[in-house]
Image (cartoon, rainbow, N blue to C red; front, side, top):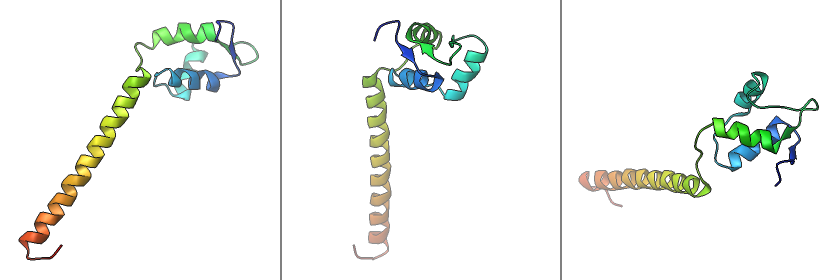
Length: 100
């Protein structure tokens, strides 16, 4: 993608930023455009160069690998919680003379 690439609108620019690891809501991007923090062309399009300039103001973003790791950790926590619940139910049944 060259610096002269054009996003059709703010929503397309937001999707691009999210794909690059920035957590940004469309409403924030619209608000920032009204404040002049990201330049929007008269026809509503946004230049890649302007998106990249704006992204620098957002601070560090998470890389795709970091995003995958965060998702994996979330899944691990979910499975661990499920295991703990299952283990507790088995122990409770055994303590009350129930069968499995």
